[in-house]
Length: 134
Image 1 (tube, one colour):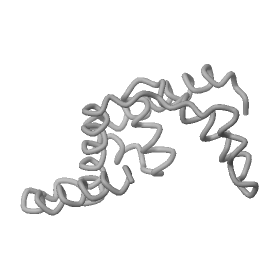
Image 2: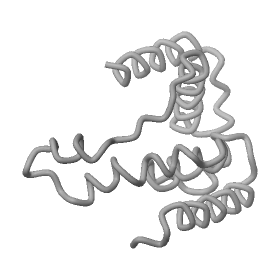
Image 3: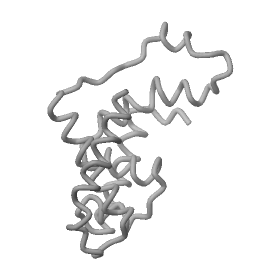
């Protein structure tokens, strides 16, 4: 339900802000920026703590679920959550949203080169945290 609520809030802010969109960047970049702001605002207000999936919960996954999905939920996401905010955001936008570094930079308000550097640091930090499991 949280995702639905955040999505609804994002679209509401987009609708209310359409007259302020200045076409200085692509519409999708503007939309991503709003969605990142909505999510950050929510988590800041709620001060949610990291949720770690216990071994027992992993065993409760449906039999058809891929082992990679279990690993992603039990190991990768907790490691991503430990990253500094900029690195975490770059990893999510670049890897999971498959955005170009230029778009990541525009969304985050940093240069393309800074996005690349943050991504590189994030990958190195994840490798250290995960112990080069892959």
